Amino acid sequence: MSRELYEALRALEHCAKAARKQAKQVYSRRETAKALAAPPYEVDVDGQRISSWIPEDPARAQTPRLADSDKVLALVRLWSAWAGAPEPNPRYWNNLIENAQPQRLPRSSSEVGWPIGALTDPYALEVHPAIEVAGQATGLPAYVRRDHDARLDEAVRRAEGGQSTLAVLVGGSSTGKTRACWEALHKLRDSRKRWRLWHPIDPGRPEAAARTSHRCGPRAPWCG
Image (cartoon, rainbow, N blue to C red):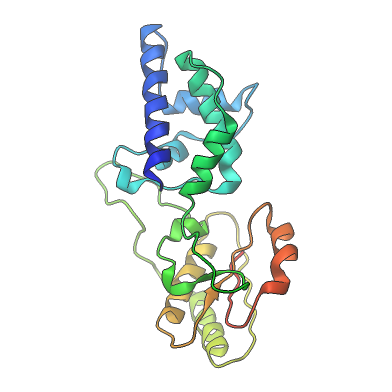
């Protein structure tokens, strides 16, 4: 995550917290999430999400996705109001969010996607972070393989052999679909062939896929 965005959010939160304390009002990230759910903001940002964006240790900060920029701006507006600061400049904050996005690599061609070997942040591809428990290890937990992983391995082998392959994972929220795809990608990292990952998401998955599918070249697995 961009240090500039992290420090700007931390500084604004500090001002909001100090102002609430001086006014003898409660401050917590849970209270922040509650206020964001109410008018005029009406966005769903839980305290855990805020803590993942601006944890105590900046090295563990996760970058808000572009799709979450409206939630970040609502958070900034709320904290600015609590701090008694002027209305924030959306362009300034949008620029910070844009510049903080990971893997915005220069393209040597018009093909969509990023070189798989350059992708090192699973959270940038929407792998869900584990729930944090006090006193327990943090970060991406060890992966426990299931039956569908063998099928994904076979799909990867077919693709590596030059066969066009489609695999669709179906399951409820937080059942590990994206993490399974992330693990399957490891088998392509050591390939001598140049693989790129296509992850259409902005402004929306269907729109992004329709707009860029004609630029999807060979050896470009799609994670969506």
